[in-house]
Length: 101
Image 1 (tube, rainbow, N blue to C red):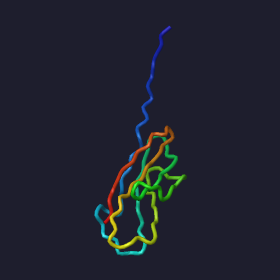
Image 2 (cartoon, one colour; image 1 turned 60 degrees about the vertical axis):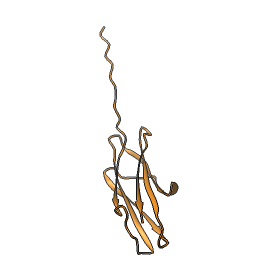
Image 3 (cartoon, rainbow, N blue to C red; image 1 turned 60 degrees about the horizontal axis):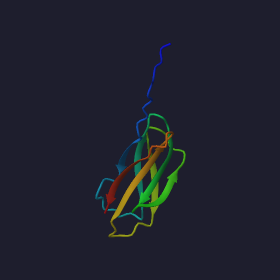
Image 4 (tube, rainbow, N blue to C red; image 1 turned 135 degrees about the vertical axis):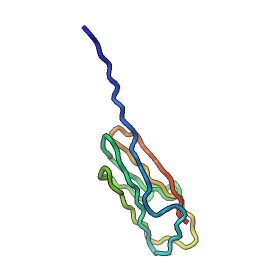
């Protein structure tokens, strides 16, 4: 009897911040932040962070699309570090980081 072994590779989710661009000056009372998300095994959650604090979560993300997050009341002259963390069906998180001025 021949025995075969197989390894299933699950790549971590792909994430790319699409807007706003890094070092953007925001002059609106609100801002839309977008993270493009994609995964080979399906997505379960995308979370939006400002200065490493969870701000919003989308628990029904659509694969291979941008996930928008709307933030009201952005103070003038504030530097924010923002990021999105994405989880796939294998619970492999992927996090990326941007700054907004």
